[in-house]
Length: 191
Image (cartoon, rainbow, N blue to C red; front, side):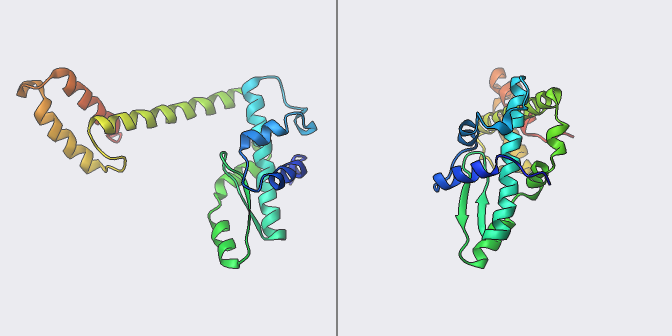
């Protein structure tokens, strides 16, 4: 495995921020690092490459610190923090919670080398679809007056209740009925 040149500087940042640090601040602090000098000019691809390099360094560091120092490195975009593992049970619990697939992705350098501008654009498009989809789901739940954890049966039952009240054939308002139907369609699984 290629040793990431960012590791020593990231370790220093983690020591300077025992309360944790965000990925954004790590990247910002390392902006002029020589490890980033080969990154291209395309803005979105450059952001992906910097992100990948930082995450690769963090996941390498996580493995090293777990094995050699019995320290756990908690990695999330909003908070990256070194956690002392003074007893074996806490250490085991923390290591089991690691997302192995994410770590595997970032430790595979070919994912950095093989990701081009088009791939990054597709990743961003997929992200926005998921983000908008989540937004639409929350709005649909609100229209049907349901909680976030509503199951399919609950969604179906609530739709039937509201449709019986608001259907134009039963004297209801057509606009309200259409919004209820749209909400139901948004929440219904693809058949």
